[in-house]
Image 1 (cartoon, one colour):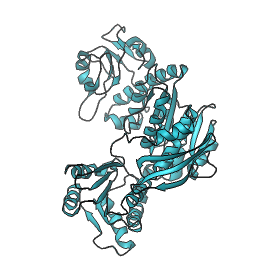
Image 2 (cartoon, rainbow, N blue to C red; image 1 turned 90 degrees about the vertical axis):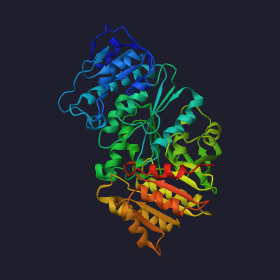
Image 3 (cartoon, rainbow, N blue to C red; image 1 turned 135 degrees about the horizontal axis):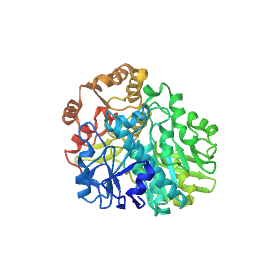
Image 4 (cartoon, one colour; image 1 turned 120 degrees about the horizontal axis):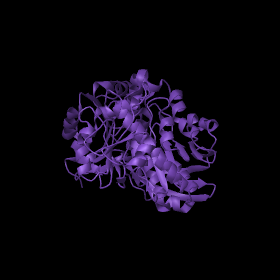
Length: 486
């Protein structure tokens, strides 16, 4: 973060000083975990369901923090944030902090104001903010964009999927005077959420990947999801850039909602940045011809799965906009790494069993992509799909799970293990689709899935593990890998 005194921070957030003359200067990071603080940092006193950060304020300052951002007086130098007016506590902020009185939401609102001030100052010095949204692929694309931009200048991006009212400003405040690019992932569980995040760190470039079924139970329809995802392009300035996936009609239609210049990406012939001649090798690594107005180049992605091609095109469009050449983009895409855990994380055990750990989250679109990857990588091996609930699908839940089970059969996946009653329609769909008998099985929980796999896996098998976070299927992947890796 840029250097600011506590008095300056109080002025920015509209708070008041407590137990300080305001002269201590914040020169380190902003942290909500006192264990992560560095000397000169600012501690966020966030209330929670089990612990209250206000109780750790004194220890944070003893450990070197310059001060505390708090909702009430604490035994330490602090900026006390003002309470939010009745009805203005953002429901996601309240849910995130787990408080009941809105004090956590007030701290997050102040954090957002602080982040906006810092981003505005840095933008005057040349900082470019890139926002990424979509129903699936946000985290992987954010990681790709960051890797393409790092050779062009210091780049800040969040770890994993830190993309909400806490993670968004927290990430923005990692930027300082040296930072040239700030890459932010933007999530939403309702209308207005992305618009609010865009106010915290106004994007110059906005990337919209797709509109799927994730959270359709909360939005009501894919069109409702599209309306909210499009808030990103509406927030772009006239001299900004909207990167839109032309392979998704709901995304390409967002062109009418922005003042910014548009670059289309995809396999669509009208896309300015597109992929041609896509092929997959036996390990499901995609190769393609990158075609752009600046020229063409060959790319071979080291990531697993054809779905990464679309993510790579969006990242390429951003990098080309910010000064990379086509050859540089192609070379960097061919050497990128997977940076976020449990997203098509490929590990091979000592006995040759390969685990595709894609257990971080799931929706119908991402599960279809993962099954296609499994089918490609498992063409000459026995393939297993261990799948659990896809959450927040509303009235479409049963049909969506049924369709996934049927797809597993059509893709010739050898074995399907469905975990939990909430996903039972997957097993039913697979059983009804063809001549499957014991190839599909429904087990009650992750423990039963692990027991089955330990008994029946053979050396050389390949296993996909995927579900929404609520299903906790990462426990299955972790248990399988405890057997030892090569």
